[in-house]
Length: 347
Ligand SMILES: Cc1cc2nc3c(=O)[nH]c(=O)nc-3n(C[C@H](O)[C@H](O)[C@H](O)COP(=O)(O)OP(=O)(O)OC[C@H]3O[C@@H](n4cnc5c(N)ncnc54)[C@H](O)[C@@H]3O)c2cc1C
Image (cartoon, rainbow, N blue to C red):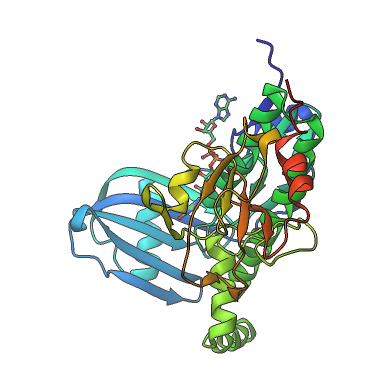
């Protein structure tokens, strides 16, 4: 099999990453958890429970017919999948009973191993998802980050393969996505530290909890963990630059339209919110869809708050703003060329 490009989306143990020789730098695990989906013949103690080992949880699956179990292990166990007997013993150690655990659908174990590929690209090989970054699951950020990698990479690769953009466009993949996952690694490592049960860690966790009682701190962390606060460094300009376009309700000649529906084709969109027909992007008309629309509301962004309303926005296929103008078209041609290739020549 020969291919022009290879994208390693083959998980944390990525064969492609290893074969390419890309370093997976980071931290060995310090803690491990058992995780399982089981049945129990007795009513379990639903919810969270804390003891000297850490936090444990029993949750209802399928209305309580099955039980989702997560148990913090008293010491690091990185030995692969646990047995039902080990789970039973671990439940008894925490709850004094195993609640008659039986019939596991699956049993597994995860750790706080935290690593990131030092390069997301080596010539024609690229990495995405867990192949590029692994971290503890706190905050449910892993899949989210991997899907965003794919969204960031897909349209760039398509343009290069179609010949509309030069190979150098691929450099922006590592430049944009590596810092995002580095922050995810950082916040998940912090969450592991905050879950430690010694008195000093508890004091730190209480202090952080107080800070998160403040709107600004809470909004910033929530924006970061949800991925809505991602800001690619695309240089100086309007605050929207490099940020995810909000899903605005637009008025158009054809009726009401949500911005995200314009992105379903995975093609770039130039949103003209000023006088209809005033923007001329004829040399990119084969690649960039232009929409004349109206929007009367405020522009409110996660973590950033309200920003100056732009009168035109160039949106990349991944939903990030490549250019925004407020009373000026300065920089539009450069942004079109950078992201969607050089202008088509007439004739
Ligand atoms: C307990 C736990 C809870 C989590 N909760 C969340 C959550 O709530 N939200 C969230 O966003 N993330 C969560 N995550 C993280 C999430 O599961 C991962 O980030 C995500 O599954 C990674 O997706 P991926 O496609 O990159 O890799 P994987 O899911 O590992 O998929 C890789 C695929 O490649 C295949 N593969 C590997 N090698 C080869 C090969 N040589 N040939 C062919 N196929 C191959 C594998 O079989 C696999 O199907 C959680 C993780 C854990 C452990």
